[in-house]
Image (cartoon, rainbow, N blue to C red; front, side, top):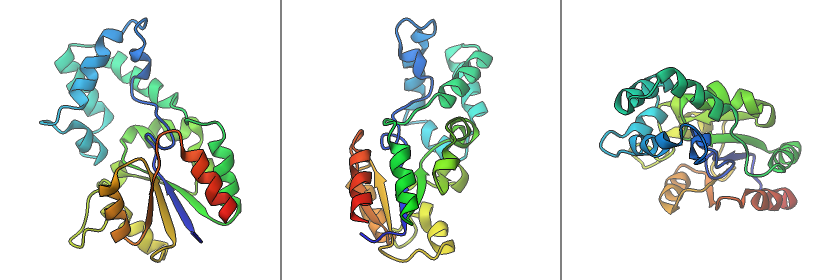
Length: 212
């Protein structure tokens, strides 16, 4: 476990925060719109989330389409989206301390997330994530998801970063909540993979820190 790079997923690994999260509260004035928003985003026939995460749609595009369908005020929807992204939080307050300690031991720590333009626009600056992590890789900017593969079945998401940083096989590890299907893709890419259940990240980071 002599890693030079540690990649960590965002959603359900570092954080469980979601878009328009305050709307979940049944006392919120816009609570009635929460479920329709989820249904719109998760509609498989339109593939909204994947197109958004691959950079084919922006937050403005999403809000426009969403409000046209739900007959909702786009200005309110957009402002509430920004607020929810700015107020996202890590699952554990100790995670930053562990990441800092791991970086001090010589391992570079990188967020690797299938995410939207919202992440770099609002979440990263609000939480100061670029101060705690060496790099941030987002599918919106890369145009591919972690599960998108080349002809050899290797992850396109990591290809350029691994090559440009001369990261050899076995020198990096991805911590992610995804299933073994992604794990197989990641291992074919020359990286190690470990599935992490939501809420279990700190224990894994402590093990890595103690081993290193």
